[in-house]
Image (tube, rainbow, N blue to C red; front, side, top):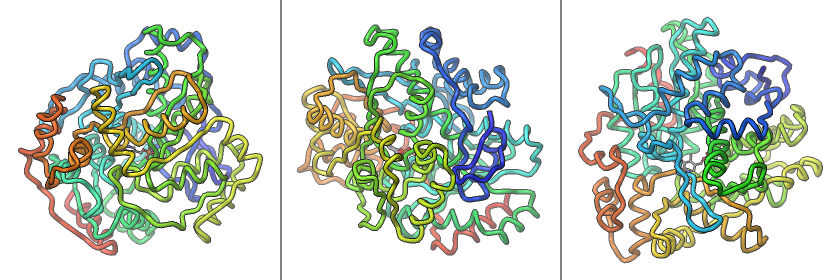
Length: 506
Ligand SMILES: *Cc1c(COP(=O)(O)O)cnc(C)c1O
């Protein structure tokens, strides 16, 4: 299988090259030139296997320049049960890796947060560093790679954990100084390992992201880094190596529902996904293109409802206020991975995608053509959830079902309930649960007890545990004992200098 750019330049490259490069030279994202098919019989066969074998098979359909043995080895290392090695916790605290929690007759939660950092980013970032280092070998690259990450909180820790002490790599994470929770911040600043660095940026997530993008396109800096035998790449979901492992859990969830006789083979189900950069839900769309029986993909937004507007009207307009919400990992106005969807629904037309992206950067909006819009409507529904409803959903679900939701998952559950009311659709629906509630203890405690006056700090994890009787994942429960190692803060225009300094130390 080969990879092409969403902006239509003609080069075809291998999966390993796509993973090493991250972003195409023409500014586009890499996508497979066709989609492999997965048959109903194959799904039944995969259902008899553990998660890591399902992962190795599905990833192998896309990374055809990797051998079966390689992928089995990396998947087995990534998707194993919890263990602790020198500088890092790895593996998953649930034997099933991605357990399904049944809420009622036709609603399930797919818990993707049993990895070491408590958010679904671990699903990709536990395996991606292995795919990347193997890709460096396959492409004959002998410089070291420096991974730059701009994070709204969850990607940063998951990437630090995944890349910590990985030979031939350095990783540098930039987070918005005032835009992450105390737990998220301490998770990052206490990261161990010699090849890691964490820096706060004065500004919000979009400022940090812009700073990183500028660094990527700075040719002078690339030259300087080259002298140090380094080059830059990304661990954000623009990298194909982040996306492909995310397709696995959609197919795996279907296998688990089959195993428990909750669905018949071939029966179509819904997935409702709390969405920010559009990576997670795009993986679901790819699973559907491969043949997974999906009825609707429901895209859930918080108060920053740019995607809801887009799916309902075909107009993407980022000229709007930016809100900081209780679901910060979805506070985003430019969803990078939407470009990959536009490519597919425009019939793989790179010129069309380029023209949309041009008007987005020039005018801040674009409108898709009617043919493109109908393919969008074929499979996607959407909705958004206010701050008030997010909090109410957490409280109601705990009171009624004794099940504790994090703020992002609560957004998705509310949007699903709205969708069901509106459409009467009674298909089995799976809400994708993207974070442990303990990662957002402050907001979750506020939801359960709006009168309590709480200072946002790591001590709230114990408090939430005591109040609810739920156990916090061990790495989160232990975070209060960790000491910050990194305390540097820079302005956006100081980010480049701090990258150079870090690399010269490596
Ligand atoms: C990253 C993140 C999201 C959004 O996922 P995208 O792939 O960016 O759409 C939702 N919830 C949580 C907890 C996250 O960390």
